[in-house]
Image 1 (cartoon, one colour):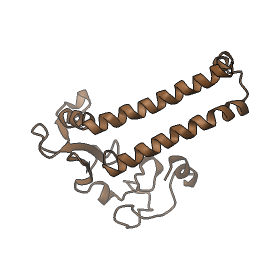
Image 2 (image 1 turned 180 degrees about the vertical axis):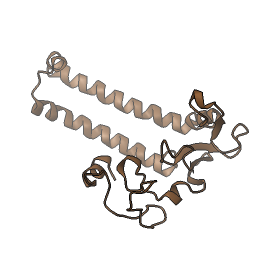
Image 3 (image 1 turned 180 degrees about the horizontal axis):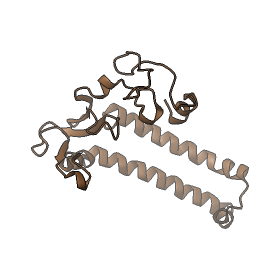
Length: 198
């Protein structure tokens, strides 16, 4: 559910209408007692049992990467489950995707951080790198075509000053936007087909 939509549903105390946990299907607690499962400030869509439940694999990717969901390490501060990308054969984090950082209370307390070895391996996987560069080139190409259209119509100066009529901008930009969206849709199909991202 979009955040704006969720906000529009809350009552004057900041509580959402009764509904079920998106994981186990049990009704979320309507009493308002801590932890307030329906209070917007701490709402996750999960009941407390599911929020604090065992870790599980959310998704597996074609290169062996796995996204793992963990219970929040400090639920009094933030109740969202935490997700880390890992590789089962990583010797640094032992396949967990995260590393525990021990720190005194005065320094802010202990916490988990991403395993940089897993994160680097995930981000630098050749197909992901190619897709990221392809996305960037699609946007840069659209920008170059747009500037070319403005020059051709002798509107570049006006565009920089924001003096072109809105209707004219929409008329000139529409074909470029359509081509860009088509290219991104083709790329999205590759992402889904090869399980590159979510």
